[in-house]
Structure formats: structure tokens, C-alpha cells
Image 1: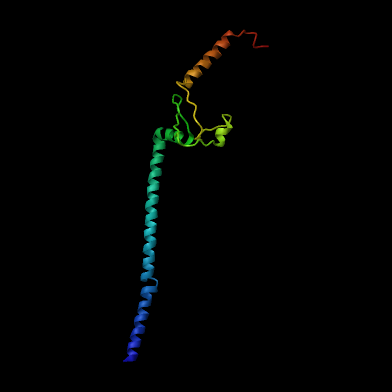
Image 2: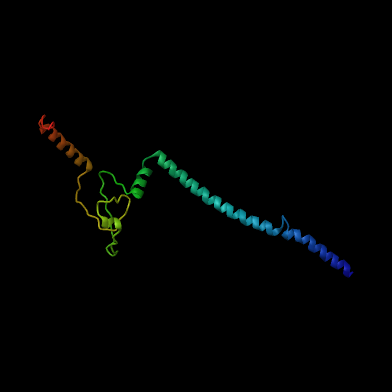
Length: 151
């Protein structure tokens, strides 16, 4: 009787081993379910990202609003008839960046500076300035003598 009990326990252990540790065992199934959940989460995130990028591409292809927005926020561009105004908090200390110290000789396009901004009241439009320059060139061209250009 004792031998039968030992044999039955040994058979039970031999049957349980593949169930827990074998190729299709419970531990492997649990591990694969965890991997599947992680991959599904990644797929959902990537699908949302792809949808967002698809929408952005459609906006860029369809109209100029998205292009204008990118030019404004990423490149710091403004239209001809607009005035850029930047509000600085009075409690915030002014930090001079290398671009602000270097002065107007270097390009600051697309760089936001913490230096105070000079405000020009009622600035003339570029179109008006260009028209004035053309008129001055035309008046200089008419007033010049024909032989003066040969010297």
C-alpha cells in the first residue's frame, strides 16, 4: 500500500510538471498574456500617433493655416502688416542671452529673447516703405543727366 501511494504521488508530480513548466504551461501562458497586453498598449499609442501625424499632413497639404502656424511658432515669422508684442512679467528677472548681448548684427529669427522689446508706435508697413523707395529711385533716375552716368 505504501508503494502504491509513492508511485501515485510520483505520477502526479510527473503530470503536473509539464502543466506548470512545460512548453504550454501556465507560467508560459501568463508570460505571453503579459507580453500581448504590453504590445497592444504600444500598438494603441502608435495608432494614435499615426492618426495625429496623418491629420497634420492633411492640414499641411490642404491649406495654409497649418503652414502659417508653424512659421509663427517655430520660426518666429510675422506678416507684413503685423506687430509682434511680447509681454514680460514685471517680477521675472531679465536674463540676457548671448543673442541679446550680441546686438542686431546677428540673426535672432526663431529665438525668443528675454531682453526688453522696443515698441514702435504706429510702425509704417513694409509695403508703404517699399513704395517710397521705388518713388525715390524713380525720381533720382529722372533727375539725372544722360551724360552723368558715363563718367
